[in-house]
Image (cartoon, rainbow, N blue to C red; front, side):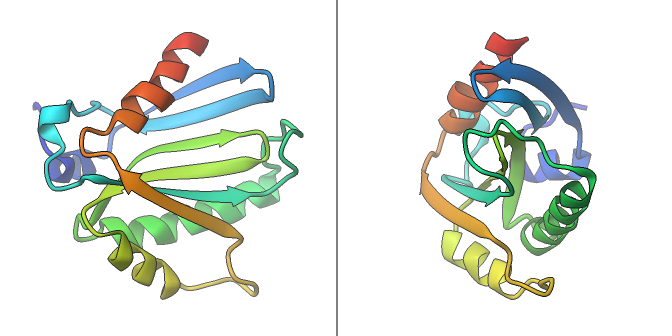
Length: 153
């Protein structure tokens, strides 16, 4: 089956994992396959990055098992909040240098933020930072993230 839309990408839920080594230590990149081409990304023109720093930048740290469990619980909640109606699509998850970054594409960042605000929390609010920018052809995913994966392979 050929996938040609973000909605189909969510439904198929196929992932690849790449590991690399850089100046800041090991990195793990998980990304959805197949990677959609620029002509297949209509309706999802905004890139939303959500970053959870769990160790000092420059430490090169990957998460320990307790932190991994927290990050996974958060990701499960994120996906339930943003993907259940295909409002946004999670395209990649990067773990490197003391942080995990989730890369979503959406048409409406404000609604994503509102949904994240209403997600169940642990005892303390999630220590996350969000930023968003226009990227209708998903160049950040292909040219920044996946180009790095190709170089590290």
